[in-house]
Length: 92
Image (cartoon, rainbow, N blue to C red; front, top):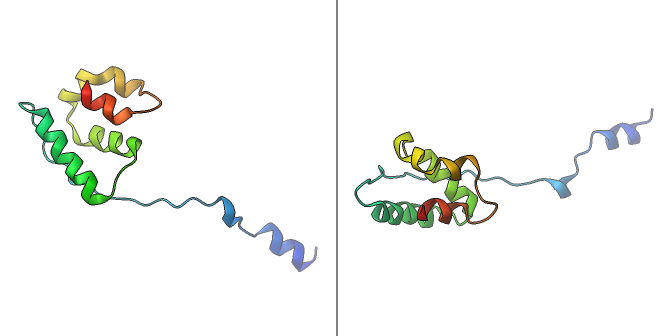
């Protein structure tokens, strides 16, 4: 085998690479008494962190809210909609 073929077999196709950035959000404790205020706070965190992706917001909320609250939206968590995951979670 010649060097040209060996180099080609080990080359990386950079046209298909995906850049992934990890952004941290400091979610406040969930307010059972006023969920609208809590969502306003976490949306402020999303804005400060530059998070606009619906799925990213959805997963941040799921990771921030305790299981007692999540049991009230189990159907959405187990079968999330294809689009508007965050808004569906927020309004249910």
